[in-house]
Each structure stands twice: as structure tokens, then as C-alpha cells.
Image 1 (cartoon, rainbow, N blue to C red):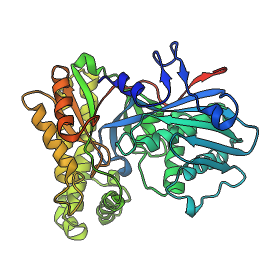
Image 2: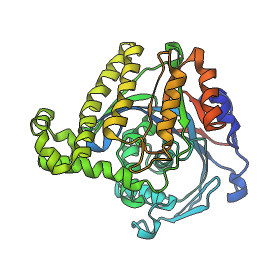
Image 3: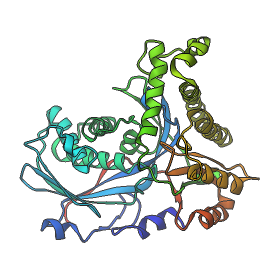
Image 4: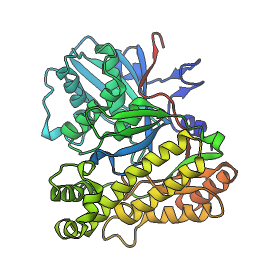
Length: 417
């Protein structure tokens, strides 16, 4: 199954052609729900993390890419102060722009993200008005491809275009989405997901200054390098794993506290190792191991960036493998604490390694970890065997072949539909 076939086979819209080139999008439901035809079509991609596992929330370095799975929003302004968003398969979200205060009862809901994004734009001086939107998605929920960030970037791109004259840069749109997720939705997260979705292409991001991250686009032609990018669904559910994710930031903060710092990027690595015995006693062994991962991962991102820029794909793959091993051994985000019978991510990694043995292909845990997906770079000559081998064990449609998308959050079409 090619990536293009996967997109067109799993959703109710039809897209033909390359982005911006003779594209026809057909969606029958906007008029059904809102009584008129849409005026605009916006798109925001999912993202994949290539390296920098759990470094962004420590003001570290990451390598990420926008992918060809996307969220689309058919939109029409409605001359009211009400935003209405119908996401396919979910209840209608209705936000009154006369009340943009954060609401505890809305936390962990779509409404909180929409309200938060609108509130931040209004705080920036944007006169946000109402609109109707019908949203469809091919970004697999719970897949580590960040459907939540794609949604945030999508809503931010809509408001930015309709009511802010496009003045917000892609990075600013990403920051608005992250703020809404942190403050209104109630989930602590870094800025990588939103930035990768908003900017597009393969990008390196240095979060040393989180208010002004350094973003650089990097060319990557996977097919020319002889590889395909696969995301494999392990079958494990992210539900009830909030404490596992939160523990990473808590433990790293304990390490930082020892040095009187807030983020690990501010801690001198040599000083960390010089005091490692005392840090162990103060923060615990797992916290120290997780810090070791972050220090090494930040360096690894730079090495991967240089490898891609010099077209040394073999070196890039070596660092991908090292990143995965570090995540498993030191960051310890492959298997939730105490799990024995169910270790889906670890099993998927073991299976992928077996199927890739004898090739230069590599795999690693993907995204937040503990559940969800793994990532594999698979030589094209064994792609069919690899995909069928993974799905024979894990189940049909568990291995998705993706490609890198050059565009971030964009307006695709305006006018008659």
C-alpha cells in the first residue's frame, strides 16, 4: 500500500494532484451541517519525530518532519461571534467569543483548544470573529503523529488567515497552539509537534530560547536515499498513561533543581557528570538515566542534521538507531513501569529488528512512547516483505508507509467549491 493510496482510502474527502496543483477536494458534509457552501479550505499536516525524543520540554534540540497525513478544514465566515467546528465523528464544538476565559470543565476537550487559540489571538490584538468549519483527518489518532498539534495548527491557520492578515509566522501559530494545549487543555507539552506541523518539511529546531526557537529546513528525499519511512501501530493504547509522561518532566526537573536550574539545557553537562553521585542520591537513578539520554540526544540531533545536509544517509541511520536504544535504555519510555504481560511497543521493536536484520534498516520508539507507535526506516527492496511481516503479527493496516510533506499549515483554496 502506498502512502497516497492510504490517504484516499481512509477518509471521505477526495484529493487529486499535488498540493496547489490542479487539486480537487470534495466534501459533501459542510453544507449538510451549516446550510451553505464553504468559502475556504485549509490544511495542516501530522508530524513525525526523527530524533530528539523528549528533549523539547527541556529546551533541547529536535529533528522532525511534516508528513502527508493531514487535517482539512472547510470553512465559511458566519458574521457572528460564534465559532462552530464539526470534526468528523465527534460532537459539534460551539465557542462564544464573548467568553474566552479558561474553563476547568472544558479541560481535555476540543472546545478548550479552540477557545484557547482564539483567546491568545485576541490577546495579540486580533479581532477574531465567528466561522463555521467542518474538519476531516487522515492523521491517525493516538499514533504519535500528533493529531492534536495538527488540529491546533489548523485552527490557528484559519484564524490567522481570516482575521489576522497572516501576520503570525508559522512558529507563532505553533506557539499559540502549544499555549492553548498547556493552559486551556491542561496538558504539559513541548513545542516540537506544533512547530513541525506549522512549518512543514524536515526541520531541525533548537529550543534554547523557547520564545524564539531556531528553525531550519533540511532537504530529505527518502526515495532517492533508497528508503521508506514507516510508522507501525503497536496496538497499545495511550489511555491512563498521563502519569508516565508526567514523570519524565518531573524527574528531569528534580535533576535541574540540584543545580538550581529550571531546564536541563541550562545544566552544564560536565558539571552534571562531576556531581553524578550526589545527583543520584538527590533525584534517583531513573532521573539520572533520563538526563543522560537528553544530554546525548541533543548532540545526536546535531549529528543527524549534519549527516542529512552532507547526504550521508548511513550516518543518519546510525544515529536513528542510537536514539532508539537510548530511549529504551536510559529514557525508559518503551514499557510502562510494572507492565509485564503487555509490552506492545517493545514487542513491535523486537519484531521490526528481526524483519530488518541483514539490511541497513533501523527502527526506534516514536513520539512520547510507552504506547502507540514505532518508527522504521526500511530499505525499499524489502518494504513489501517488511510491511506484510509486521501486519501478519500485529494486524492489518498497522504499518503505514509515509512521505515527507513540504508544506505546513496552509490555505489550499478560496472561492467556489
